[in-house]
Image (cartoon, rainbow, N blue to C red; front, side, top):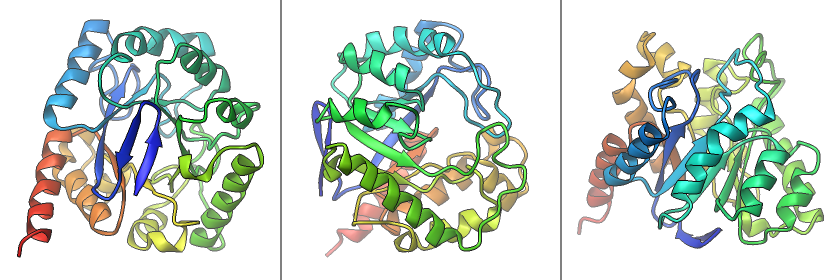
Length: 279
């Protein structure tokens, strides 16, 4: 399965690792660790590549549970200097944003290969904007509510079917605006308006919510779900659990796993691939 991602065509017949760059002071796991200076962010990005990342995903707004919105100017000030530096690197660059204005600025500067949107291009003008950039990859994520309230009391009648219908509608909207379906990727939004039980059901049976055989991404690195399973409150102590979840996602068909701990995840997937390829 080949997938167009800006300057790159990714072979998704083998799983890809997306390394997380949070240029934010308040991310749930590494808030402030790499966001204080440009050099610190770039050093972190370089390390992710050395560790085996196939894609770099940069975000300037925290979308953790109970996160407070920031201004568009603040988000752009956080990501623009980093994008300007890494845009020339020979690696796919993904921008994690839900705001059309931020997408537009990055696309006009030719700084990104992919838009990773927790709001699934529902912001005004987002779909029409992406229709103008036919090579850019798009990840549509499901989220119930908004980051500041999504975990208050998430409820569904039938979560798999509701998410599947959400993706059907979002894909149809994209296609109606002239976006080629082959540019799209799905993300069920683990931890975004979902309980532990909801998350586990989505992870166990991706065929229940996936539509049109589109590729899909799983992002659960260090999240509360893993903390709940392990009774571990410190996100930085959830590395082994995160790797186990990413590995399981890959065995169930995930095309991209979005992770903090690239080196450890890369090792696990490499071992699994070696076993799979044994004669």
